[in-house]
Length: 284
Length: 230
Ligand SMILES: Nc1ncnc2c1ncn2[C@@H]1O[C@H](COP(=O)(O)OP(=O)(O)OP(=O)(O)O)[C@@H](O)[C@H]1O
Ligand SMILES: [Mg+2]
Image 1 (spheres, each protein chain N blue to C red):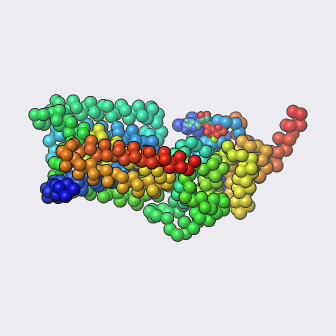
Image 2 (cartoon, each protein chain N blue to C red):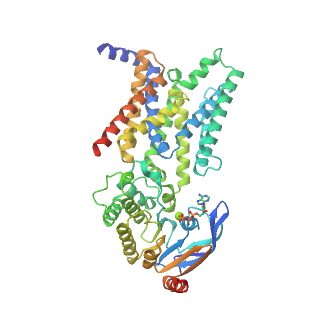
Image 3 (tube, rainbow over the protein chains, first blue to last red):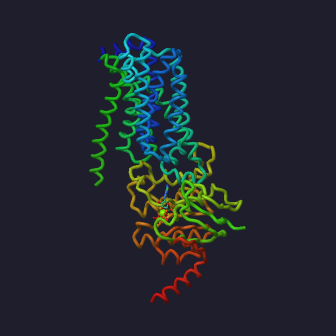
């Protein structure tokens, strides 16, 4: 045990480890808050689609050689989020088909661009990093850390300030509109936060695994709790602890960060699933 | 001036009218029942009145006193919210949002209003229950309490008694009637002709052609038809 803590303290003397830890915790906080709404609105697959769009945008941004790739990735993802969530509310073509279409196109285009204009000698390693986020979180620059931290704090603040409205719009959009709440504006806010969170989460777990950060904590919490506030708080706590544990474990054992966090989330989900079944049996 | 008036209103989706030539006026304190077959456009009309969808043509005008923020809407029951983690309290108090404006949290007055309406609907002690696990009748009462938090003026109810047993149905009608007696204007869709119409003072019949009349006139023509048929 002592050895364990010793090793952790040792690693935490490196600034990039501390950065990774702080950013990871903040990102998982945002993604879990948002996840509750996305899961309840049945928009989880939109999160998945957006993460692929972010991957495509990242590939293009890498080719342009910009130092701060977020300047391209963020606007593109935000725009796609707005289009997709708008579509989701009154889907003419099947909404899920549209999302699937956009997401595979972005994935294919991204991979193509990375191969046509390779920025390093090892393209497959680059692709693997963007998809599974294996090491990218440890290579964040100070600037990126600040940007991520600022964006996550902003996302959390918006969520807290609009908490009651987000609940009303998620629970019953028609009623909310009838009483004069502008559902459109709040759906827009949800879309923008979704995009921001996904772009941030790409640094942590890579674009293929983002959905796990969004979905697992919310689903786990919903197994056990029956009101919106408890579910939101519980999913935030679960997500933050899983990410913290995942990051520590990956440092200690040298495993890739993203998959380690996702496995932790999954284990918690299984535990909560069983706890939920037990609770239900007891009620009956 | 009338509280709500519709003139040559056509309602529908994507510019295709579902029902046309709707003309009527409602005054404060009126109780209107909307009847008609499935798919005749009742819910569509109500959504238009609540401002959820735009009229295809014609217009709806409201009395100045009745801003859009004063409509209490009880949507047609849907299965969507079965798994939703929301407590009775959270659902009811969300009716107060309209008075919040940009303020992020509910104030004391709004919470008191929510508590009062929970009591009014006989839901006291159930605040912490999960909305999805309530019975149909309890759910309707929760939604009614929420609608009451949103308005003291106009209640718009889309089939509030569908799926309820006769006893709870009667109770719901009584509650709505009591609110109406307190001065709340009511618009209600119902398939349950005999009893629903009995409480109302105006009827809007939507069966291809649209007919608006007082309940008395409606009952007279209805009886006349019965006589001819019989
Ligand atoms: N979102 C929608 N988009 C397009 N058409 C719709 C939509 N909702 C309903 N309709 C169509 O509009 C017509 C009227 O529907 P509406 O829901 O108003 O009927 P209703 O009178 O309320 O019926 P019910 O008694 O079954 O509730 C129907 O033909 C229906 O198919
Ligand atoms: Mg209907």
